[in-house]
Length: 208
Image (cartoon, rainbow, N blue to C red; front, top):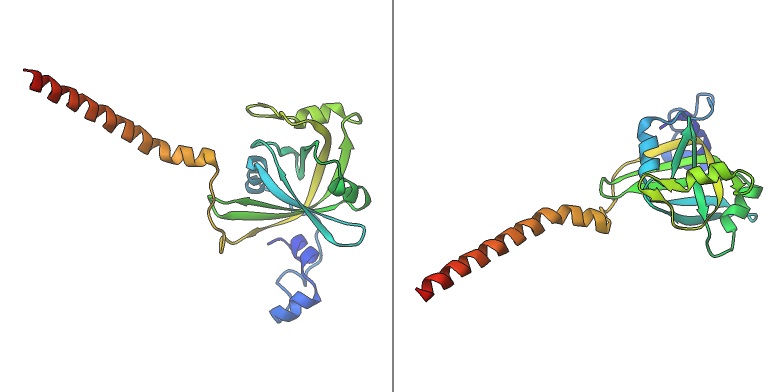
């Protein structure tokens, strides 16, 4: 747990419940934590995450964001970005970010039971303001994103923390399930072929 994260999330009320301030709060805030390869992989391998922004009334607004795996791009150092797809035209998250750039992300890898919390500051960049960036964010490893991409959202990570795996229920995508059951399907097909072959041999014997 980095000092920056602790300074951002812990306060007097949580400290009172803990009985003392978490280790690190007695040291100066040293600024943004440096993202490592572990956090970079978690973000760029994700196909979904939850994003919280701050509403004008001060309430948190949480939105589910998803796309093809790899839709979150590492743009260098602590900077990440993704294309904002055309949605229901409410523009709640985008509007919130224009007034308050603070953002929090929750990313989970359910098969591995790992989860990452990220705090940062986001910039909304319209497509016509930087078409080259939007084009870059509209492409993933296996091709171009099919959804209509209207703008770029770029996040400068300030802090992050990894949660423990407690209470994380493993979940798998259809693709992951297919990968895991494919060996058994292949085995069943092999056995079916073997049974069919034996049945033909028995039928041939009966005819003689």
